[in-house]
Length: 135
Image 1 (cartoon, rainbow, N blue to C red):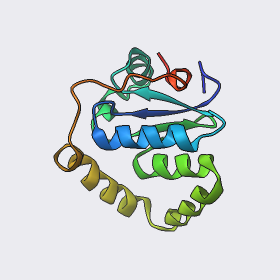
Image 2: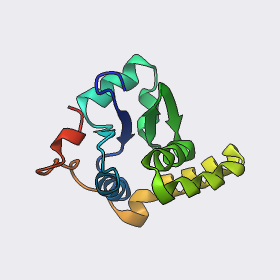
Image 3: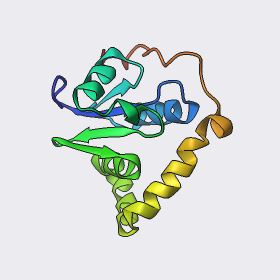
Image 4: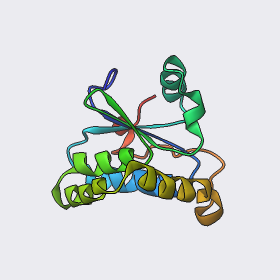
């Protein structure tokens, strides 16, 4: 999207749960169509600021795909859909009302540091994955 020509997943780079998701996306996205940007990066901060979304860095992931912005549970479901394969089956959760999905997402998100811990700094891309990160 924009600078990358790819879909972009913006996430909390110090969250252990988010970091686990990022490692999984790197493995699952065989074609490299999904770029990654932690909230803590200059690119994400600028992107969010330009759209008046700086407050969204707290308890959500943001997924940019096909010129649309997805937040919370919709971001995760759209990410899985874009990964294809068996992950598309998670689309069945779209039958749940957004308010219910996002309430469950928010409960997990607000407790993620307590449940999964946090890092002191965000992930540094390793060999073979550095091209996946925006910055």
